[in-house]
Structures are given as C-alpha cells and as structure tokens.
Amino acid sequence: ITSAMEVCKSTDISLREFGCEQNLLSRPDGSASFIQGDTSVLAGMYGPAEVKVSKEIYDRATLEVLIQPKVGLPSVRERSQEQCVRETCEASLLSFLHPRSSLTLILQVVHNDGSLLSCLLNAACMALMDAGLPMSCLFCGVTCAINSDGQIITDPTVAQEKESRAILTFAIDSTDHKVLMSSTQGSFSVYELQQCIAVCQKASEKIFLFYRDSVQRRYSKTL
Image 1 (spheres, rainbow, N blue to C red):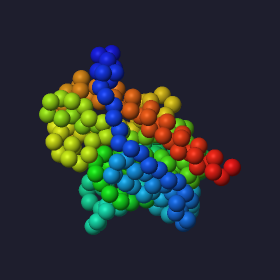
Image 2: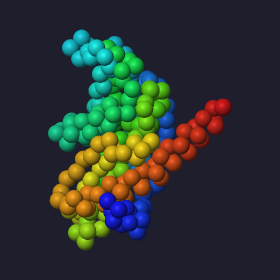
Image 3: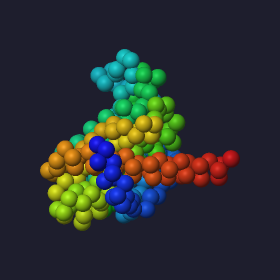
Image 4: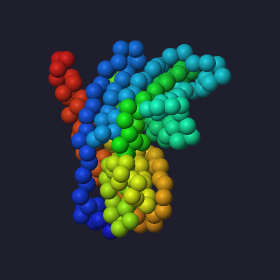
C-alpha cells in the first residue's frame, strides 16, 4: 500500500470542471444538479414521508433510489447503479432517526460523457444535504480507468472508458476517506486496485473542497 501511495503522489490527478446547484426544484424536499465535464445529473430527494406497510422497517427509514436514463426505460445497468447509490447513502445516513418512514431519491441522467456513477453519487450527496437529512459524514464518488498502458486516468470520458481495460468507481467518506462502496468492471491486479483506491482517495479531497465552496457560496447569498 505504501508503494501504491507513492504512485498516487506521482500520478497527475486531473478532474474535469465541476458545477453544482442546490434547491433548484420546488416539489422535492431537497434537490441538486451536479455536472462533471459534460456529464450531468439532476437529483430530487423526497422524505421523510409515510411508508407503505409492506416496505416498513421498524427501526430505521426505508430508502428507495430510482435512476432514470436520458432516454428509454431503466435497464439492468440502472438497477445496478441504484444499488450502488443506495448502499452508499445508507452507509452515511442516520436513518435510525426516522424509523417507519420513507426516503425516496430520484436521479435523472441529463447527459452521460463518462464517470456517470461518480456523478450520480455526487448529485445524491448534494440532494441529501439540501434536504437537511442527518448524516454521519458526506460522501463523494470518484471514477478512474486503467488504460492499455497501465496508466490510471481519473474522471474518464466515454471515449477514455471505451479504450480502457478496467473502470473502477469508489464512494469515499469525508471524515476518514474510507471506501464506502466500490463498483468495478474489467481486469486488474490487486496492486492496481490499491493504486486506484489511493488515487481516488486523493482526488476526493478536491471534490470535498468543491462541496464546501459550493455550499459556502450558496449560504453567503442567503445570509
């Protein structure tokens, strides 16, 4: 892991430009749009609200995540992404404070130009923050790709993803920079996995800094 950290220091961690806007929808309890380069996602958070008896959990809130693709109906890919986002949200939400209630997070893909899962995670976190839901920590998503030369590319575009032999997305928490969730496809070694985790943990610092700046700008206008 030490050598992986050394690689992390020598790797140029470049992320595309971020953009974020909170509280832009009137009906949800919390909403946000998140942009990474040309990848864009809109998120709406509803709840805590009344839950169906069949879905009720007696000691915590029931979280449902729905992802709507840009065109067409949700497929197996969206179901897999929903599970990744839900697991990450459940790891950070203090859902036991709202037992027997329902939380619904709806994510609309506006445009996909690579690193979609990480953009979905970032939009989800900003929507949870906007809804004022209690959380033990914030989280962010970072995607990296390993190309045919073994180079690690952070925040890859669709074109870069197509040329890569592996794509890895990690959800990182804001307190200890631990990995809350991982989603991987392609072939890679254990050493490359450690390298990617180290690089993504380093990249997450930039995203959390953007979160802070974005929220500060928002509240400095309202105060």
